[in-house]
Image (cartoon, rainbow, N blue to C red; front, side):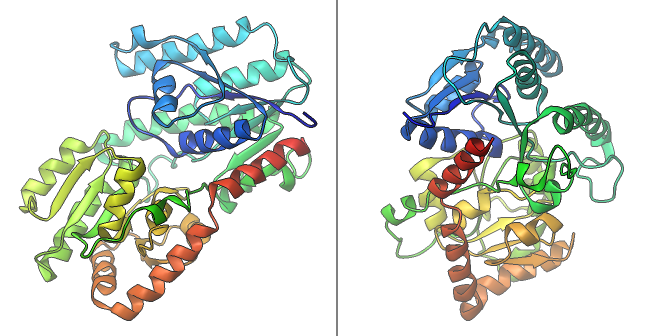
Length: 394
């Protein structure tokens, strides 16, 4: 086949049943690249393999780098072992040159993806390295950092951990994929990494699937949240926000889709405020089940206090749900319409914006149309084709 690409995807950061934005991007794109006839090879350990199979990624070659027997160890120790394992496996690969036009894509900046990609790029000179770098770690001790109080050491570790990879990518990658325009300029140097070689990917949604789900007669949930239960996502702040909402609308009901490190703290805060009848925790949901929840909700809330963009709200917006977020710089270009922006980090104003959408029918319908229209621009088929053309330009 003319111009067939040989695409090698490093995807070793997957852990547990969750699905990160970077994972979603590579899975949805790889599915379409393989369908178009390109040779796609996915390098994963056991959790990554299960994640891909769960999301029905087929017609690709899986290269398994086993590590599950180390999983019971302390998470930090396991993380280090997985990095070492992936580096060793990268040196053991004998050849990538089965086909011409070889591209190595690291699906995130995590070391277990970036280091093997760098090693293969150095070993096989004709190959090109495309590095995914979808979130800059927040600056330690900054006012908007989600890593405050007893989490400050974790935030400092994350920041220090990321910077060597940032400089490695900036010095050696042939192309970089980020999520927004602000992050693009952290890599563009005008010489090696020109503006054409640093792309804002954003993300994508399946624009056809929501039409297959019937509209309910009534909607049970006033609002829906989808995302990791992580300090960056503002999940604890959301419980405070919902307390303010319920002070003015006692029957308001929020549903939260997701899992993560803050699950126990979320439950404790719900109990502290007596919101057990107003907040429903659904755990991880995906596919048709997730779309049904969106269709059963009125508004999507995105209370992230630190974010590079985030594609999860757009999945709900594809079902016509308007959104509410904080006015983060990245979200101004990511979600220029269909979402009410709230001054950072005014929790009561965030609640007022939710109530405005629930009570002002004209405002709701206007933002609902905007949200649906924006989601149509995020079609995965279009996004995968754009990224494929970028690969070919290399």
